[in-house]
Amino acid sequence: QVQLVESGGGLVQAGGSLRLSCTASGAIFSINTMGWYRQAPGKQRELVATITIVGSTNYADSVKGRFTISRDNAKNTVYLQMNSLKSEDTAVYYCKAERSRWDYYWGQGTQVTVSS
Image (cartoon, rainbow, N blue to C red):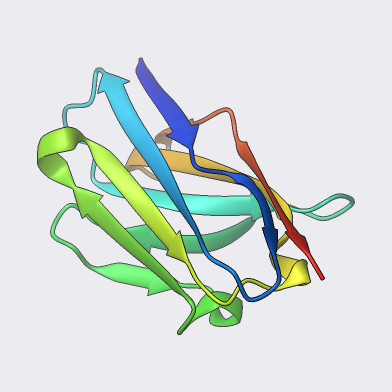
């Protein structure tokens, strides 16, 4: 099992910034991709950004240029720096750790609320 603990969510005004962190523990061997997803009320969970163990990144179009994902493999931690936040970024943000498409784990989620 892999445990993921997220932190850094909160309430921020539009245009502000937040930094999310997610630390993995447990059976973390062979974890390749880590990423952030979000789910707004009444909507499906969607990809925000992912990063592989070698640092290749992928972003949703809606966050490109505003959000930056990074990873510290020595600390088993992935970060999401969110700048120029908009009200539509309000959601519960979930961390995901993957060994493969069929072997993955989710964190418990952290609330991000952007007030306009």
